[in-house]
Amino acid sequence: MTISWRTLSFAGATALAAVALGAGAARGSAHDVAASVDQAIVDINTNLGYEQAQAAGTGIVIGANGLVLTNNHVIRGATAIRVTSVTTGRSYKATVLGYSVRDDVALLRLANASGLATATIGDSKALRVGQSVTAIGNAGGVGGTPSVSTGTITGLNRSITATDDQGSSEQLTGLIETDAGLQPGDSGGALVDASGRVVGMNTAGSTGFSFQGSASDGYAIPIAKALAVARQIEAGKSSAAVHVGPTPMLGVTVQSAGGFGFGFGFPGFNDGGAAGATVAQVLAGLPAARAGIAPGDTITALGGKTVSSPDDLTAALLLRHPNATVLLVWIDQFGTRHRASVKLAAGPPQ
Image 1 (cartoon, rainbow, N blue to C red):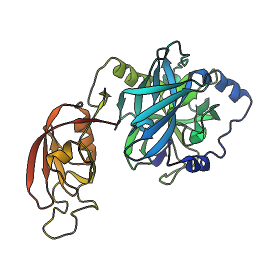
Image 2: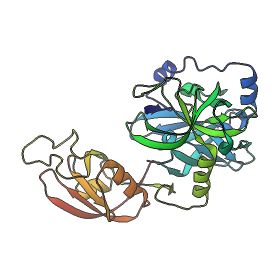
Image 3: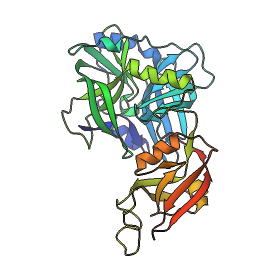
């Protein structure tokens, strides 16, 4: 099953307004449950500097000193992050402490925050199919009083392929499936039980251009799994699945070798015979440009790690940190192999 991330990207206020319809919350017992959780819910707004766009999502406060749990895709590509408490209206600048692309979890720290109300955590391992749940988030990215959607758990330990609005996809496993409707902007919000305890983090829904399956499907990461990643980040323990600290940047956008792009289909050019990550764009003044890489070249190794795909390049980069010097290997459009040592720059989260 392929579905779209529940986040919102927009180039201006008109695009935001277009998806805000229907974001109001129904009153009643579900609203009462949500009201008990609202104090630990925050709106997340990001600037995507390299794309000249903005995005909106939701977060859950898990530390009184400003620790906020959200989805990785909510802050992916962000060059600036602003977090607002939905109950106090206070706004904070946020930094990314770390994230897991594989698990779609990120941990933020709010600047100059203290004494924040934190979420009451439930037992996601005790969930059962048919159990009532409420999804709380920032539907439509409009901010203010959180949106509320009720439903039941329709499945456990689900696996999906999710695609975001930037074209990236991830295989996610062990998810909670629910028929509580999730909308753009709900990502990173809370899935709570009837007692207002957070049992999951809203992650994806099947509303969008690239879904297959029921339009009522929604998915959440079990809170125990999300918190395990967050605690690893808080402890500063990097791994193959979890990146801690600032993100290293090479300064290219890439696609799979053999795909459409510069240098394909012309005699004498590299037409995809070499596996790797083919460069679609080179950002001026960054490590790849300084090394002499050009659009149409194919990166085949970084830091001693073989690169057979764009995902391999991301994985190799996330094992490093800004200012690290690594060996970069690539093949140009004419089939010539190149090697250069490059010093990685700092960039937005992957």
